[in-house]
Amino acid sequence: MLFPPDRITLVGILNLTPDSFSDGGRFVGEGGRVDVAAAVAEGRRLAAAGADVLDVGGESTRPGARAVPTAVELSRVIPVLEALASEVGCPLSVDTRKAAVAEAALAAGASIVNDVSAGTFDPKILGVVAARGAGLVLCHSRGTPETMQRNPRYADVLREVSLELRHAVELATRAGVARERIAVDPGIGFGKRLEDNLRLLAGVGRLRRELGCPVLVGPSRKSFLGALTGAPPAARDRATAAACAVAVYEGADAVRVHDVGGARTAVEVARALRGAREAGG
Image 1 (cartoon, rainbow, N blue to C red):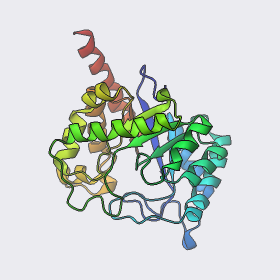
Image 2 (cartoon, one colour; image 1 turned 180 degrees about the vertical axis):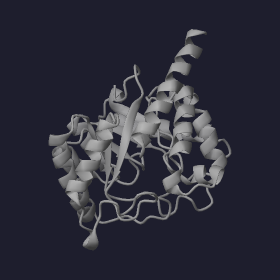
Image 3 (cartoon, rainbow, N blue to C red; image 1 turned 45 degrees about the vertical axis):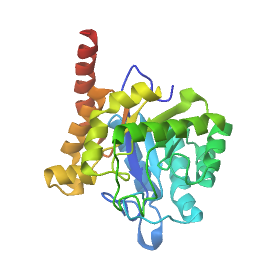
């Protein structure tokens, strides 16, 4: 199984972009060149802090972001993935919507593809994952990062997200992806209002039961936490840890975060409480 049920998988975020909402430009210098050594050092730090998976991305998917050319995305992620593959012991994931990037990343050492479009942006990505026997995270979203926050509306967000992710899982399995290699992500912040994000976090258990797949939740530093706390992105790690704890208590199998150390403590407590609740019937 992609995210084993006997533990909570911590996915550490490694953004190699100039424009991600909370850490854009951290590893990208003048002329758009990625500082591979600095990025690899951060990957080692995340692994040492307890990350079970490193998720490497070369295209921002923040609200309003435009797609970048495939060649640019490749130039950002492939050198870092190749270096990390020989430097860290944990699995590597590539955060991409493009089949060509997924294929190159899997050849470079990644074993998981995290697609925020759930296979809709470039359907060929499903065949790439199947051919490689890789893991696949299908993230719910509507529209593209450039358009997704333009007046999103749901009548019943849990029901609609569940149905749309079920369809994505069906398409992936038809393309040959093994079901045990698939996880789903409700897409916190991807075409969602504040109230939608809160309902999805509180309803993770329902999604897990209805879809029969492990659930990854990615609330890290997102704008709904800013709306709740008034904190800027870089100061949202405590709120992120709280959101992760709730998601894990409700049934999440994995969380995707910038601050691995802080989240690890929160999810350990939440998992223990979930176990106590389940043992009590």
